[in-house]
Length: 639
Figure 1 (cartoon, rainbow, N blue to C red):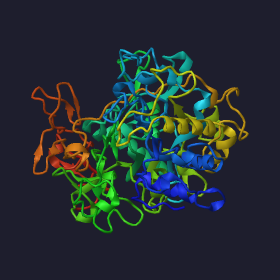
Figure 2: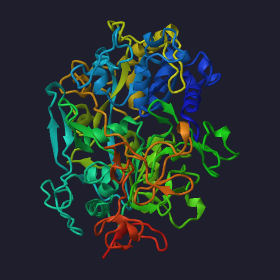
Figure 3: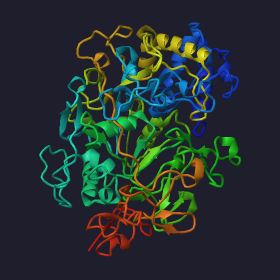
Figure 4: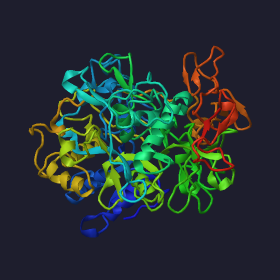
């Protein structure tokens, strides 16, 4: 079934489940009568796992699993499933802080954070009678039983034609064995001490580079040091890295890198394994994920706070929740909650019959804009996040895949789950250090971005009362737990969905990887198998968003905050220095003594820029000859 862009994920779940009844008939279930039916138990979790979980729910219904007709999968991101499990109390809780969890299970494409399952991590506090609001639940640490399948995050180009000539990216890696039982391979942090040699492409795929950069993927996505500051992301060494990758692809430049938003477990995988930054916060987790050059990309949910969307065409309504809140013919878009801070500027991708609108900015004024405004100063950063899936695509992953495949110039790349390069997509994954995301390489964890697909559970037999979810907490993310009946339905579904005889055919049919080579086999005793590897490493929280971040207006409304080229924030009438807390990290640097963010000007030669005042030389021009006359696109500081 082709899903339509702009349909909210919770509505989409209902439509898919209704359409996938056994033998093709529509199944009668409480959750498709209305998305707000009080008998529906809404589950948040990984979008990567969306189709697996929806089809597994449908299979459970066909098999007569008790309570399965009441389960309803919203998706929205792994972090949101985690938040629903650990939420305590709330205004709707029967027993106040004695109640734990809005849902007892959560599909996640990453593991829990250390503060939830690692009792030895810094600051861990287990929940007990005297710490009812604590989030520590060591009993939730997943085992092989929790793994329903495997996937791989991939960087991909077109499969043929323009832009398809690059096959492999090399970069140094290391084994992080700070926790020996959960050793993890990561990309080595980019070497910021390497000198700038603009025009010298010798660093590309060179494991012993002496100039420019040592980790091409980190510098492209997060800047030279992974902090995503304007200085890090405008740095001439990043500009060089992009041109080196473009040369490998056989194009003169890369127009956009499309990615999943910050609620996505796929994004967490890229941060955790590629944009690796040193941290002294916890000796068990000396490496944490960095940031992306477009900064905060929260889509429809910021932590536990639901965000409002922006109507797609007129942008007159910035508090919409669903399409019917917008004028006829418009959709409520959450892409416009994603920030657009990347100082390498490209053309603003227009919204049309195959592209949902994405955030663009006039970096001379700091005002948000769209291509339809016909403003020659309206541009878009290199890195762009996708929350809403495009018209004619089925989800965010296939949207990114289609954007790459359908760019006839070959100047677009993206990252997503392996579904993005499934047969027939017209795309191809780049190998990393000559290793590709094949089934075998993922099962034995030879591919760097191999990952488990979890069905996490806070209600397994043996869980103590302080860790045992009762599904009575809430509301959180606008959902109230429904108690014992919901818990029973979720646990029955968990038993069904973690039986590989039930789920492996679904996993295979959707292009994911079964734990065992022979579908239906129990993988938990197999040697050299990622599903069976325990304990699974917790995923340390990445660096927080730079200031300014969040929504333009109060309570998650108004779209994302925007800045001009030196980092001043648009307040609706003028540009001002963003307010910040002492020591806070701003997009322009560290918060000043006056508690405002500094400007990011005086950039060196060949750094990315929008206007002359960005540069120490006072000149911002089309050095590479790839710009658009009359628009501040692809400009660099020049003599």
